[in-house]
Length: 314
Image (cartoon, rainbow, N blue to C red):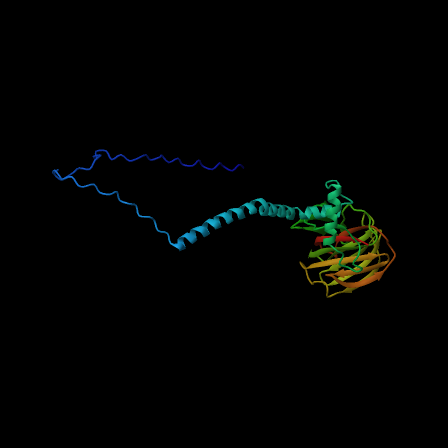
């Protein structure tokens, strides 16, 4: 629907000089004229010289100086400050997309030049150090999970993964663990974190060192009742539960955000919630694979939202 054009401005007729018809053009002399004696010539009157006080002169000088300085200030603002602010605003608006492209430069290099890739990636890496022991490694992936960059929307018979309300939602309808993964290479040793919130149901978390079909994997899930589990799946079957415990580091209840992380280095695996290490385990079942964001259904539909995902290779 097109917006109607604004109404044309009303043209007011221009008013010319008023003619007072019927009025005399000269004033009538109501006195009777009488002869008068000529007067001696009078000296021309002198115009009085205007007097300016010192205070007024000082004020005028100050005002002139302010006008000059103000003009200079506006020139500096319009030619230097304003363009810099506009550039900063544009940079901030594109920061999310740029950060994702820069951090995943090895996988998505098409839209960045080689020079931009090197310099920008160094900046992003410096701003995102690994916060987990051993506090080393290289930032490999980063995604705020607010819109499709690495992850994509997915709709299946029992699983839905979609972007909504500024986060990536994983919705599981059947009674098992399920999740979605981006198209990235397999990883062996890494630190991996994501902010997650259980909106409905029970548990959500991270699966890693998985095959592409999420059949054989490690999974670390955190539940709304403060329970957490770390287990091994093989061919869609739970073959061993390595850890089953409760932690006060987990924020209790639905709609509570928890920062969940895992550090896998060889056979040693550390588990974190909200930057606190809650447990460790040693296991050699899997050495590399993909990672997934998961929801675990214990009889009722479970919906988990994720954002702020980062991964460092060790």
